[in-house]
Length: 130
Picture 1 (cartoon, rainbow, N blue to C red):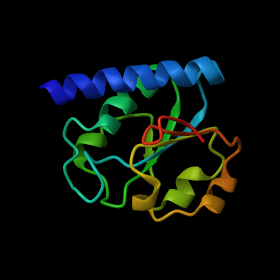
Picture 2: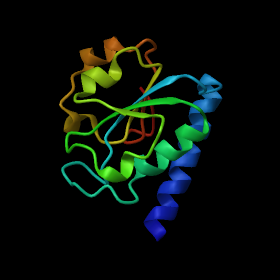
Picture 3: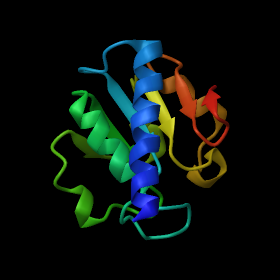
Picture 4: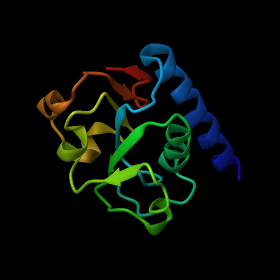
């Protein structure tokens, strides 16, 4: 229960920070990299990403996601979520990227982020945007 509350608050604060820098998220393409509770684990229940998707949907953002472990059924009921087969696909044309897992765990290189429409990358693992 405490982790769920913490993830909920963390997601709320992250969306608030993003809005303060980008303004409205309505219609913006958000690349979300990492869905599981932590890298290399197939546990998606109460993950930070699950809570974050809910907050981004409330903001009317278009969410494109990738996780090396695949996608659990619990994420399939999100109407604004599009799951892709690679991180590179998710980054294509994105206005914003959120690294919900450390970059090293996502099989991506720095040059892959050049696929984005805007170079705004938020890395909570580093504590700020890149």
